[in-house]
Length: 154
Image (tube, rainbow, N blue to C red; front, top):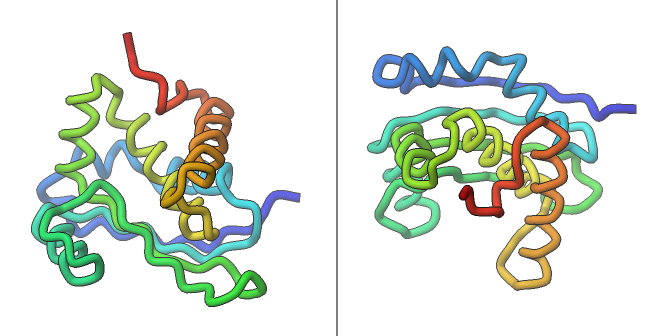
């Protein structure tokens, strides 16, 4: 049985990035998240501009720049339900997709999969965990019809 998802989608950056909002309808984002879930979850996905992304990264990670995705996971133990916020910074995602020669939708899908795995406790701080997480991400992305995000495009 597929895990249940309660999803809140927020797009305060819509004024600046209307094409991003159009590319990311609720059903699409939900499909990407559900493909990444191993348990029922309650997630909020927020698409932000560079200023908000930088403020959040500086406040919570002490890094003074906007990053592509931030995940705030709220479960305190493995017994707690999966709950979290995924924050995606539109200009950073757009810039990275262009630099990597990837379609913008594919990069968003990858970062949402990546953030959803973080919300479930996956991490990539040590090499063995990074390899496991990247392998799971690659499998999920391929199941969604995208290429492996860790294989450089020719």
